[in-house]
Image (cartoon, rainbow, N blue to C red; front, top):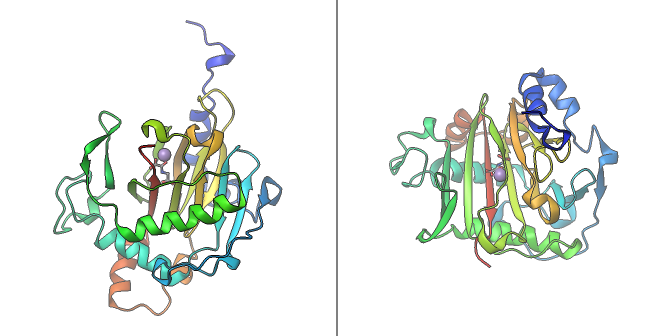
Length: 286
Ligand code: OGA
Ligand code: MN
């Protein structure tokens, strides 16, 4: 069978490229405001609302919101968490969210298997085998997580044409330094596909690739995601192929997150120093 230009996979070669690229080059080549300022368009934030101090956020005037010129409907938000706030979210992802049976390991209620945790689901639980959510398979989405995503989406949607979203399902991904996430689209959210997906990064950095609606539509763009960064996929980008080909050890992580550690911080640091945690939230039903 001949391969036409219509089905040429532009995703896999770039995935393999970043998988093998020396770390220092990944930091330079993956897009960030510092390395590729012209690819991001700053969106001034005009809305000011009171944010609950328990969410670990900075005052909204400190946040930096950008629309990504290389992917229609993709937003990048930085400077929104405090260091203490990030520590608190990492702590929840280590000590609270994985203590249940909706994890890759099944029951982890005593958290004995933390080292082997790869994912935990919250709210409507994603069925990875059948790629669906089921109405009956639901536990309460933690309040603080719902409140966090509602606050962020409210601010972003008041300054852009991004619609509001009711968070109903969360996936927490735990990446080791050598972990990857293969190219995929998140399309199982029934009739909520017009609603944005919000994604939080904590711990070590990652190269996030985002391409088109098929692997051949366009060459993917690499984005550098660092601790505390938030991305929001809406509009065309909501259904685009994306992947994590690489986790990067962030030399500044300790300075950013863990100055003056107490005993609990030491436990968290011993976990996160060579890991990355991603929390992503979606609306499932209309
Ligand atoms: C996902 C996902 C990206 C990330 O869980 O669907 O795309 O940043 N995660 O880890
Ligand atoms: Mn995804």
